[in-house]
Structure formats: C-alpha cells, structure tokens
Amino acid sequence: MDTDLQQYTVAEVTKGFVYNELEGKGLFGLNGDLVIQPEYQRHYIYGDGKKDVAVIDSLLKGYPLGLIYFVDNGVADGPRLEVLDGQQRITSVGRFVTGKFAIVRDGREQTFSSLDPALQKKITDSQLLIYVCSGTETEIKEWFQTINIAGVPLNKQELRNAIYSGPFVTAAKAEFSNSQNALQQKWAHFVKGDPKRQEVLEVALEWVASSKDQSIDGYMAAHRQDSGINELKSYFTTVIDWIDAVFIAPPDKAMRGLDWGALYETYHHKSYKTDEIDANLEELLADPAVKNPKGIYEYLLGGKEDTRLLDVRLFEPSTKKQAYAQQTKKAQAAGVSNCPLCAQGSNANKTRIYKQTEMEADHVAAWSRGGDTSLANCEMLCVPHNRSKGNR
Image (cartoon, rainbow, N blue to C red; front, side, top):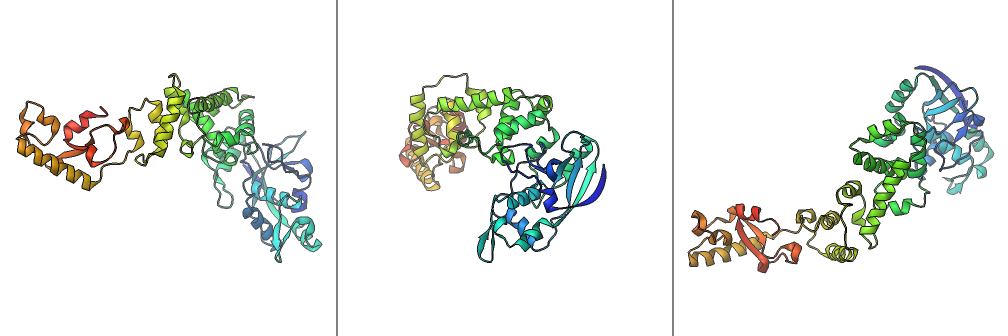
C-alpha cells in the first residue's frame, strides 16, 4: 500500500459538510471529493458531549488531532477520497462548524457562530496531517483493522462490516444501525446493544446465521453482494413477533439480551395457552425464591420441567441441619434408614443411617408444583436417590 503525506486545513476538509446520522455513506467533505463515512466505517459515536468537545478544545489549544488516513479509490466520476481513519474526529469538527453542538468557553456555552472571529479562524485554519493511501481492497481492509481511534477500538461487528463491505452491509446498517428507526424502541425490549455500535445488527445476524448452522462471518460472506436484506429482516421480524405472541404481558427487563433466536428455533413449533403463560410468568417474576429471572422464559417455553433454569433458592444450612436431626432421630427409633426412600426398599441400605454429608436436601412438594423452601417442605435424601428423583 502506497502512502503520501499531505496537509489540509479544517476549512478545506469540512467544505460542503452536511451531517445526517441516518446515512451510511452520506457524509462528504473537500467540497464533495471526500466520503467521510464510507460504508465499511462505523457510525458516528463521538456525539456524547465529551469526545466531540475534546476534539474542538484540542484545536483551540493548538494541539494536533493526530494522523488521519484517506484512501484514494481512483474513481474518476465521483468522490475520489474516502476516510480510512479519522472519521470520528473529522465528523466532530464538521458538526461543530455547522452548529450541531456547543462547547463551554469562559463559563458560557458557545456555538461556532458565536465564537470570537479570531477563534473561528483558529479552528478553520488548523492544519490536519493526512496520509493519502492507495492499494488493493485487501491491503486497505487489513490496514483498517489495525488502527483504532482515541481509545475506542472497533468491536467485532464493526470489523465484520469493514471486511464484508458492500451493498448487503449498507442495506443492513440502514435497517438495524439506525438509532432513529422507530422499531428500535420495540427491539430494545428483547435485544441488548447500541445500534450505533452495530450491536443490534450483530444480534440479527447471529439469529439468522445460527438458524442455518452458519457463523456470522460465513453468512455475511455468502450475502456480501446481495442488494437487499429480505431474509435477514424477515427472520428477525419473525422472531420478534413470536416473542410478542407467546408472552403477551408488557415486556420485563429480564427478557432483554436472551438468545431469542435459539429459543425460537427450539420452541416455535409448540402451541401455548397465552393466558396460562401470562399468569405463570407474573407469579414467577414476583417469587423471591427465583434467583434467575432470565431463566423463567425458557422454563415456561419448555413446559416447566427444568427448574434448574430458575436457580431456585437452596435450603439454608440451618434448615438442612434441623431436618437431618429430626429425620435421623425418628429413623433410629424405628430401626430404618434416615433416607426415606432407602427405608422403603429391601436392600442393604434399608436400615443405613447416613451422615449429613452423604445426604442432600430436597423439596417434598416440588418447587415447580408450589412447594416452598421451608423446614416443613424439606427432607434429606441420600445423594443417589436425590439425584435420581429429579423433578418428580
């Protein structure tokens, strides 16, 4: 890859700048000759009132913004240059000079237009050191993966977007990485992540790829040149609609971040009585014995069989000790084993008195059938019998 070190002023780079968060490839500079946000770049994430302000403060103090990299794409009839590294800094400057945010100076909020003209000129005349690179797509993408910006490294999906850039990524980002998409609020009940950091897109890709026994990388590679995302969008929407159809109560925070794609694949062929699901869900979410509310959903989808998903509260040591003492005293008086199930048998353990360390506490009435975690519902069983009993 060839590089050529050049200097541009802020005024030159931001000439013709128009900020539109919704565009995946719509930020331009150098009077239309520079694409500031190519499709393989992440969305703008500096707009937090800290990082963007720090960029402007650096210019006002005369500090360099660090090296910036452009790519010369060789296009003759369109923007010739694309930002390879420096998009967040350039966008921050462009947003400031076009009045999109303010800084605090001398105790007052100041937009670019309200700054002293001398300070405006200091910003626009600031020199940016820029390497203009040219090379093959593979070389460009490999270099892109090695560079990070101001302590905000690219995450896995941002790197995938760069590696598999093309019409599919552009369309997928427009749907799933747009924080202004009205559906994001609905999706946020079930999907955990920041759309701007491609985390919602990553979940959507994970769901559809897993349904086909593919990795995200494999799926993106196979669909890289697709002009649409019909399959991706349809599958994601189907899973979301299925969740809404089964769990009709207002979404609980425990639903967020579950692997709904895997749950859909496992359980969507089953029918459910939504009123019963709703009543059971309300009861379980309110039960203090349930230590893993996220497990409630798979527990209900699976027919309330695997209580391990709920991480039900275990008996307190004092309760187990008391139950053991009561059972052992009664068993010794009767000449039978202190394990009630062994006492009913006819083998050598029928009269065996187990040590407490050889026994485990069990719910007499199963927790899943309404039994509580109390001394009255606690019995000590030998380890083999307790572990073979399961949820019966």
